[in-house]
Length: 587
Image (cartoon, rainbow, N blue to C red; front, side, top):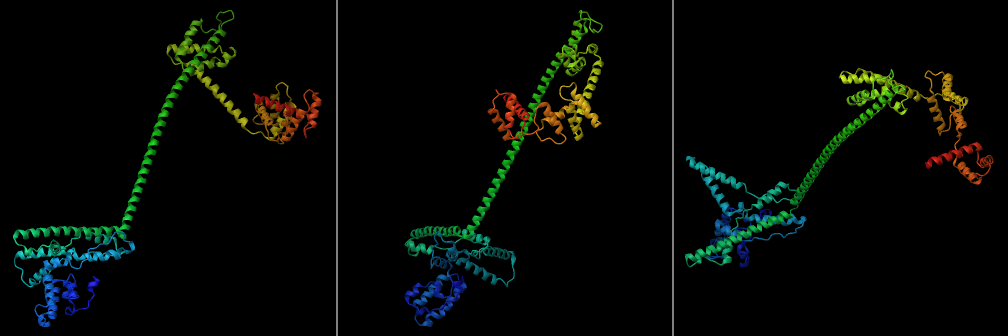
């Protein structure tokens, strides 16, 4: 406490007026520099010093000198812990606390002195406690040189030391600090004031307010009643005092910028944690949703696949039944056609007849239809000539295959391995493999590019063998192969395909294809030069200008004269091409 530590100028009580003497408190009476929380020893020294100055023997003012009586009253009150406690509780104390709404810049200047002022009633400043500490110190000093006797003294000393340790825990209040004070010290400060215990004694104040003089009571009952009234008033004042301290702490904590910043930081951290938790929960929910959708999609896909498999299996079964039914129908038709072909024209069975009568044949046929699969029936049908033989009214039927059919029926009836059916399958498989190789060879030839010599030879052959001749394309293919001496001769189908490609190409002809294109113009009437939009417009204008009722030769000469760069033949060919395109578009 800086203002208490400053040395004050000593003053002379004898020189003060009566009005100024009444304004002095007992501490100021005993000495200008005597603090409010002076120890008993300091008070005793100050009294002795005052007695040397104001005693009647020194001043000669008599025993009733009001200055000496004031000094004596001050010492009597301050030397008695109970009286001093009551006196200190009321003398020169400002109970006001700051109002709400203190600016942050003024917080430390406004609240600091208020807390400093209220420390007057802290437990470590209690006059009763100071007296007890002085007594303990006196006892310790008196027993310090003596001998330890018995265990009881040791026990008492141990108890006293534990009390001293407990009192050291609240020896002072943590500093109020400033804006740079660490937060743990700030919390320690407010923790002290939240659990603040005031020693303030309101007995003297309550006695004055109730106007009860216990010593002047007429009876014991009246004295007891006065004490009860005073105690009731004391409790009320004590309660109001603690409410005042709590309100001070609450207002200070709400206005403290350090706690506000801490509160804002904690709120931000909580908000950030809540936001992070929310995002984590959303991410978790989103992940669960995606996993659930993925699982549902997989289950749905699996279900659909199973349904498709079932449908495909059903379709496959229906298709197999249909194929088996068609195979049976075709087999029956082929066997009946072959059987009829084996019968002579007069209706009797010839030497080639396999069955004696139709009924036995039908029995064998139905046995085979019942026992054989669609593939096996197909093999027998292929041996008899296949579907083409039925479409050609039996021209390609193979009557000799009836022997294999009957042999297969005999083996099937006997339950033996159908060797004849296996032989038929093998022959059919060999035929299919040969046909496949032939198609691959043809495709390989077709895919091989034509050289310039081959294209030139094709153009010469087309001109040499005009349309209308017999076996024209055979002759063209032979001409190309002989002229080019190819290791892999070109077939007539390849020559026809290449000729059609060159003829239908819209690109300008190259040197190697000019002759082929010219030949195509000669045969089909197609033009080798493209028509521009302007030439097409001129052609339409000439067609409108010269009607069809004119002489045909004269009309087309006139039309050709009206079109730039085109002959009569080219105009006729263009007209035919446009007319054909219009017909195709209508279709």
